[in-house]
Image (cartoon, rainbow, N blue to C red; front, side):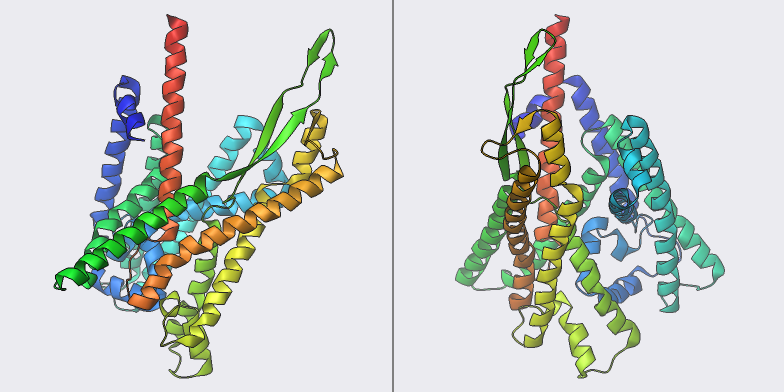
Length: 437
């Protein structure tokens, strides 16, 4: 990775792209520190802790802490990510959008434009919800129509500007812009998290206990990172052989290829969806102010990941079980809408391809379904292990940090994709230079 980066810096065009990307990221981080007008940031942070609980950590990951600070970039990339997921799901459900996606570059431009408008719409809705919610809880210096209007305009404009900056990185910089911004947001939270761990488990402890705690923390972080790398890079390759065909006077085909099935086919989508759904009971509990000790209050409490693996709250295991089932469901569901075995089997049959030992058509489709189910199961088990590691240490040892399995999966995925893009740009430049010579 470092070798790729060093070689990229030697090439002027790529070096300029890296510098441009770096400058854009500086602008994003500055925007995350500028407070929105008329808001008490401390009151907002306290309200988020009470209402969202553990879900606040995920939002802080995605926004780089700007939501808890209630800065002008408080919404950050969350409206764009949400609108992208919605569009991806709608593309499967609505034939017109599916046809638009298949319509080459023009179709993709139309979908991108719709995603932008949807991002602005979601930004407005989320801004209104935050402004009214925080205003009623006394987080505004002066709660009135004018202050709500200013906050809605500020937060919506901030999220739109972040989206625009991300697109500029994609066009003139390196990597996928939104992913790079999301990466830097997550990384920006890590120093504070490690400082928190240091103060909790190492500072003012006996030398032996402090050293043991430091070794355990480093081992857990590195072990999780290695597991994430293996999970992200692992794939199941299904061999495909193409029969020789006579076209005119030429004999074509006969080559072999493979279908790559990623073990973690759905990425972090299942974890995000499951966490979002389970955050609803926590919000309802705080808004309704349920009486403590009631059965309903305990059920709602069990859905909060702060209580999982905590021996003082054994009933919270029900929430953990629900979380596991939701992650498994969304993993299979999301994979089913992004990979269609019947379509793959039909395309192979039209191109004269077949899987050795498997007949074309329906048998190939059944074989792909069988392999895909096995691969998704292995992937979701790995995903659950990675996602539950930080939750386990939070419940058992109260090691509450914003970064965890979800953020590490995003970090590794974005870094690997960016490095691959750098390598491909250097390769294209090498061949261009060779041909020009």
